[in-house]
Amino acid sequence: MSTTESTANKSDSSLDNKNTPPVLPTQLQPVQPQEFRHHNFADMELFLRKYSSEFPAITHLYSVGHSVEDRELYVLVISDNPKVHEHGEPEFKYVANMHGNEVVGRELMLNLIEYLCRNYGTDPEVTSLVNNTRIHIMPSMNPDGYEVATEGYNGRNNSNNFDLNRNFPDQFVTITEPKQPETIAVMNWLKSIPFVLSANLHGGSLVVNYPYDDNKEMVTQYSQCPDDEVFQQLSKTYSQNPMMHNGHPCENLYKNEYFTEGITNGANWYNVPGGMQDWNYLNTNCFEVTIELGCVKYPWAKDLPGYWEQNRRALLNFIHQVHTGVKGTVSDISDGTGILNATISVQGIDHNITTALTGDYWRLLTPGTYSITASAHGSGPFGLLKFPIVQQESMATPLLEPSCFLNLLPFYVSIMAKIQRSLEYVSAYYKT
Image 1 (cartoon, rainbow, N blue to C red):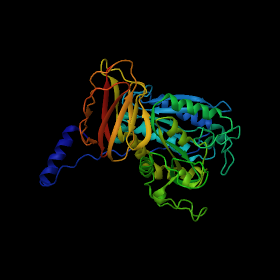
Image 2: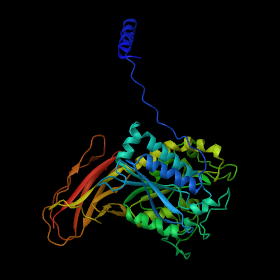
Image 3: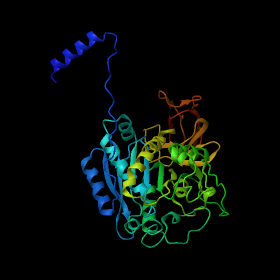
Image 4: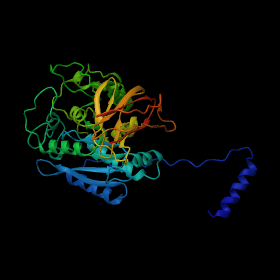
């Protein structure tokens, strides 16, 4: 239709319907994934290389190491500046297929890659997430196991027949099995990037599992970590899909099993010594949960679209959670240089985090009022300390302005912050 014709038609319509409000253009619906099938290693590698090549501005494909049988442990980053950590931008990760025969997470990660790439620049939510988050997706931590996997136990372990989710150092027991190549590669990866939030995708039930996964007594009872409230909030964010939230995941298999609101403390379900999620929490700044995606570990390919429909909203909602709580920078006031490894502590929560290379940090918290302390060691006397809180519209608001004061080594700054919905930006400065 020509411009002239369009104008004429609009004019005629307005004469006939003088009181009819103008029709606003309908917002485009997000493009949904089209490729629903099982991907062996060669297929997965081809898929990842395809999207890395087709969307070079927002993707970066890399490997964190190799499996026992020398397969790459691939990760695809999706972000507006995918190759580097941007100051102030949180790092998020999904890890799937840790057990080779639990394949739903692997396919969901490929679906998510397709969804984020194809909707970037057209869908506001996707565009905002990609522009403001560095999203790392590892579709398979156990590619060797997948290659021999069938429904049931076969393929669960790696090629050396070790369960990778019992292979990480544990706070309560000594893990005697040798660390596997996949475990070592992932541990090194997690130490090299300042991850804030993560989920480890499994199968065999339908629930979100949060720390701690075990206890000293190795008995089935609640094992509470210092950030129990935060983990419950994170878990409920994912478990809101009706099937999971119902709390009766596999009635045909486990008739008496019930998870309130679709979440559970790990040790209150069963003990998992050497698990990855607890190691994340205790050894890095990253908060990780384990998500069980369904009772069938290796479903038919024809059922995969249903898993995407059940999980796509939750997958996006969970990424959004990396933008909750407090974030900020600890810098040297004399030259603005960020301070690495400054400690961020929250009064009443016995779990500290540390600043990244350029002094930025992120501290996940539930809504509430907190006294937050930044501390670091310096090499000389301190001058005036300044700790401005910068407020953003519709974000968390400070309860009060922090005072400026002088202190000796090491320096400490205390602030009060009221977390309402989202991010509180806090900058701490000190002078050497």
